[in-house]
Image (cartoon, rainbow, N blue to C red):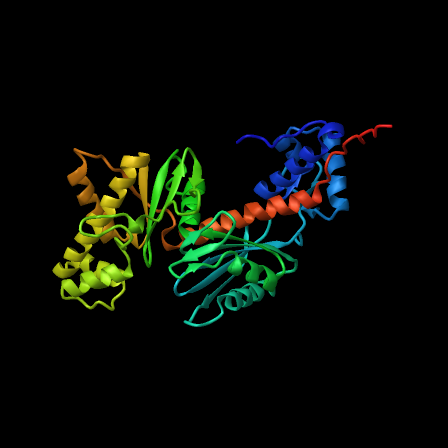
Length: 383
């Protein structure tokens, strides 16, 4: 693992302080000797930076190292009251809230249902506040993953038209902190890119099936959102006999398939998939059609972007659908090879992505406030 940037304190005080904070966030409590080894800083530089950080309440004593031979050495850690970030995943059923500290550790969790015609901002805010009651420290920011198209400035677009930044602004005002809104499928792709099935891939497309089908696209190790946030809205790709703009695979499509195959159209997708796994012939016919549509979506993406693999997430990771997709892909292999993997995080992938982004954003925010900038020489005024 590469060491954080570090150098002489007189010239690189900001980098040295940041290096120590990042190391403590990644490794937890450490002694001065361990910080020297991790950052490459001298003992004097570590001591001076720690004195500065202790003065700003950025770090605090964290016990004594009694395991290493020789005199006991004191450990330091990030101060426990630096603040928190909330990661939120909003779907059709509810809002899942997770509170993280600057190390990325989960400190509290709450789940709230979202009945129809309720103020989702108030429901989310109350869930966040319940989490905050179990910790001590301020809420500094929120990362919220939502379904639908999210523009670069955090606006949300849906079938009823854009709401601009109304949701973000309302939640920010209610909680008194900054709020970042992200598409939930993109967050799932970030989770896989960071620590999941896509961690070893330079490019991939995550296909997540929930209420609808969406894609998170990673190219050369970076998430691709598109110019207006539309990248990944693959549910509306045209397929015979489905015209462009009509959903290829969604709850409504599955209901229609269920009706056509003599199954209950009110059943959720998961129930049809479970029935297919148990040998129900009509359910298996449904799953075969779902797999055909999903594989054609993957084929269309492959012909444009040529990713290394496709990661199946959400309901698409159900074993019955994974097997059916594999059969469809085998039929296409001679003309268009497609590689499919299964998500490492299942239905929790969007929340895992939100937690990762919230932790990283919190560290960036807190560390920027704690580490003073290197003084710049005053600019001489012209006479």
